[in-house]
Image 1 (cartoon, rainbow, N blue to C red):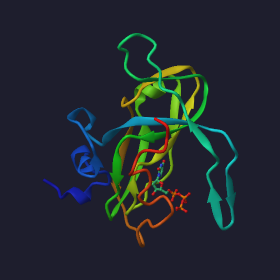
Image 2 (image 1 turned 120 degrees about the horizontal axis):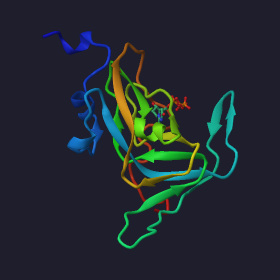
Image 3 (image 1 turned 90 degrees about the vertical axis):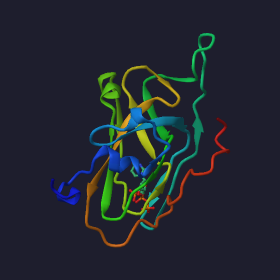
Length: 173
Ligand SMILES: O=c1ccn([C@H]2C[C@H](O)[C@@H](COP(=O)(O)OP(=O)(O)OP(=O)(O)O)O2)c(=O)[nH]1
């Protein structure tokens, strides 16, 4: 048996130790599925400058129950949305995280665009959901998969998103 760190990517079981909450269903061979918690629509322009950034105002999409007893669902017309995942994620030292769309999302003409998850980051992060054909997403459904790769790095993440979205409440959902 080779030592785990000889592999570039870590197992889903290892990733699961850094994601909470998780159910058995979320743990995949090579990563952990992430669920959709809140879907936002951006309303105002953001701003990226040489010395900073501002995120434009956004509003949470309404959750609907179109049939009696149907679960809370986001009915999303074609467009771009920002999704917040339901899980708290911690990227351990000597690792970097990548999020991919769940293939069923992609097969339904939707895509998640994501950025780099830095060593030392902890929070409930976000992704860009591109809806190219109307889609229904039940709140709490699995839409993405997080994988970890072993990685060298200098310092750990200490930016403005550190600890983001860990206490809920002000999103209107
Ligand atoms: O798809 C992604 C990718 C990353 N992150 C989290 C983890 C990452 O560590 C953090 C910051 O990402 P990045 O360093 O790319 O953001 P930035 O715009 O450069 O902000 P900062 O100036 O705080 O580094 O955001 C997400 O929520 N979603």
